[in-house]
Image (cartoon, rainbow, N blue to C red; front, side, top):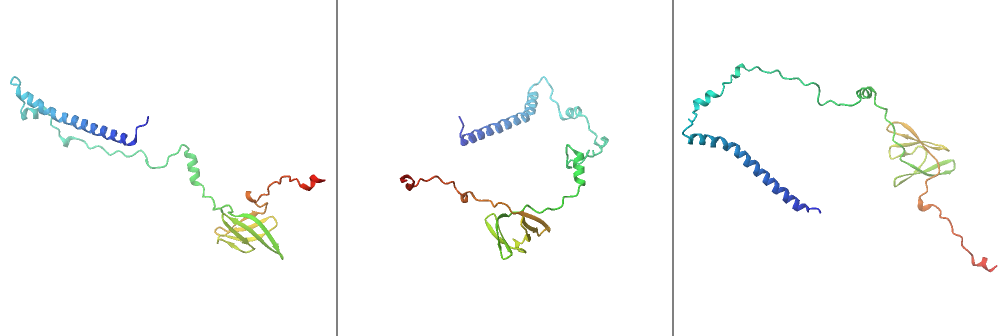
Length: 193
């Protein structure tokens, strides 16, 4: 059985108040002890009460000028440096130059192409946008069409000048556009013959 959250918080508050009260009470007991012992000794006539001079003799004198100053300890190492179980691999990775920048994978999907009077037009899509592409066109200011061949479309990623090829293949057909198998329909004419 689960206790509702409101009841739990009330319980926590009560426990906190009881804990703080107990701590304060215990702290008050420590401070009250010397007063009771002094009052107890003063009430007993058979024991002489100690005066301030007697207490001063019992406490040894501390000479601070005789104390030696300790040398500050230096840290054993840098507590904030990176640590690894494989220190050799870390050193090797640090010495390697960063890899050269690479163009991201082509974000376009090939839909089809049309050849009209020796001019080829390619249809591409990217997410929810369609593109009609010809030789020399620039797509989104990032890709330029360099060549349209039989096997694919060559694009240049302009920020790096890297060429990438989008192969022509079977265009992906959406599930809604796929032909459905036909059921055999019996003609009434076949039954008459």
